[in-house]
Length: 104
Image (cartoon, rainbow, N blue to C red; front, side, top):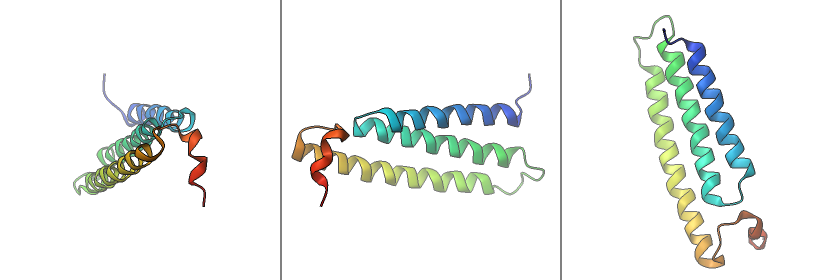
Protein backbone atom coordinates (compact mmCIF):
# COMPACT_ATOMS: atom_id res chain seq x y z
CA UNK A 1 0.00 0.00 0.00
CA UNK A 2 1.44 3.33 -1.00
CA UNK A 3 0.91 6.38 1.13
CA UNK A 4 -0.77 9.12 -0.87
CA UNK A 5 -1.55 12.75 -0.27
CA UNK A 6 -5.21 11.90 0.30
CA UNK A 7 -4.36 9.70 3.29
CA UNK A 8 -2.35 12.50 4.88
CA UNK A 9 -5.16 14.97 4.27
CA UNK A 10 -7.77 12.65 5.76
CA UNK A 11 -5.66 12.07 8.87
CA UNK A 12 -4.99 15.78 9.16
CA UNK A 13 -8.67 16.65 8.78
CA UNK A 14 -9.61 14.09 11.42
CA UNK A 15 -6.97 15.44 13.79
CA UNK A 16 -8.16 19.00 13.19
CA UNK A 17 -11.79 18.05 13.80
CA UNK A 18 -10.91 16.27 17.04
CA UNK A 19 -8.92 19.31 18.17
CA UNK A 20 -11.76 21.66 17.26
CA UNK A 21 -14.25 19.50 19.12
CA UNK A 22 -11.97 19.43 22.16
CA UNK A 23 -11.45 23.19 22.08
CA UNK A 24 -15.14 24.02 21.71
CA UNK A 25 -16.78 21.43 23.94
CA UNK A 26 -14.53 21.32 26.99
CA UNK A 27 -14.96 23.48 30.05
CA UNK A 28 -11.45 23.22 31.44
CA UNK A 29 -8.82 25.59 30.12
CA UNK A 30 -6.11 22.94 29.88
CA UNK A 31 -8.25 20.76 27.61
CA UNK A 32 -8.94 23.78 25.43
CA UNK A 33 -5.18 24.35 25.09
CA UNK A 34 -4.72 20.67 24.18
CA UNK A 35 -7.37 21.03 21.46
CA UNK A 36 -5.61 24.08 20.03
CA UNK A 37 -2.31 22.17 20.01
CA UNK A 38 -3.99 19.32 18.11
CA UNK A 39 -5.25 21.77 15.49
CA UNK A 40 -1.73 23.17 15.08
CA UNK A 41 -0.38 19.63 14.70
CA UNK A 42 -2.92 19.02 11.92
CA UNK A 43 -1.76 22.18 10.15
CA UNK A 44 1.87 21.01 10.46
CA UNK A 45 0.92 17.67 8.95
CA UNK A 46 -0.64 19.50 6.01
CA UNK A 47 2.49 21.63 5.52
CA UNK A 48 4.72 18.55 5.45
CA UNK A 49 2.36 16.53 3.23
CA UNK A 50 2.00 19.27 0.63
CA UNK A 51 5.76 19.82 0.65
CA UNK A 52 6.45 16.08 0.26
CA UNK A 53 4.01 15.55 -2.60
CA UNK A 54 4.84 18.74 -4.51
CA UNK A 55 6.46 18.41 -7.95
CA UNK A 56 9.78 19.85 -6.68
CA UNK A 57 10.23 18.83 -3.01
CA UNK A 58 13.94 19.74 -3.02
CA UNK A 59 13.55 23.07 -1.26
CA UNK A 60 12.50 22.40 2.35
CA UNK A 61 9.93 25.21 2.52
CA UNK A 62 7.23 23.03 4.05
CA UNK A 63 9.62 21.79 6.71
CA UNK A 64 10.72 25.32 7.56
CA UNK A 65 7.12 26.50 7.90
CA UNK A 66 6.32 23.48 10.09
CA UNK A 67 9.32 24.15 12.34
CA UNK A 68 8.29 27.80 12.64
CA UNK A 69 4.75 26.67 13.50
CA UNK A 70 6.07 24.28 16.15
CA UNK A 71 8.04 27.13 17.72
CA UNK A 72 4.92 29.30 17.78
CA UNK A 73 2.93 26.43 19.29
CA UNK A 74 5.52 26.00 22.04
CA UNK A 75 5.37 29.70 22.87
CA UNK A 76 1.56 29.60 22.81
CA UNK A 77 1.54 26.62 25.15
CA UNK A 78 3.92 28.31 27.57
CA UNK A 79 1.96 31.57 27.69
CA UNK A 80 -1.39 29.80 27.81
CA UNK A 81 -0.30 27.51 30.62
CA UNK A 82 1.11 30.49 32.55
CA UNK A 83 -2.24 32.25 32.21
CA UNK A 84 -4.12 29.15 33.34
CA UNK A 85 -1.86 28.81 36.39
CA UNK A 86 -2.28 32.50 37.27
CA UNK A 87 -6.07 32.28 37.00
CA UNK A 88 -6.10 29.02 38.97
CA UNK A 89 -4.16 30.61 41.81
CA UNK A 90 -6.75 33.37 42.05
CA UNK A 91 -10.02 31.47 41.49
CA UNK A 92 -9.01 27.88 42.43
CA UNK A 93 -10.63 26.46 39.30
CA UNK A 94 -9.83 25.88 35.63
CA UNK A 95 -13.48 25.82 34.60
CA UNK A 96 -13.86 28.52 31.94
CA UNK A 97 -17.56 28.98 32.72
CA UNK A 98 -16.63 30.49 36.07
CA UNK A 99 -14.27 33.08 34.60
CA UNK A 100 -17.02 35.65 34.05
CA UNK A 101 -15.50 37.81 36.80
CA UNK A 102 -12.51 38.54 34.54
CA UNK A 103 -14.58 41.03 32.53
CA UNK A 104 -13.38 44.64 32.91
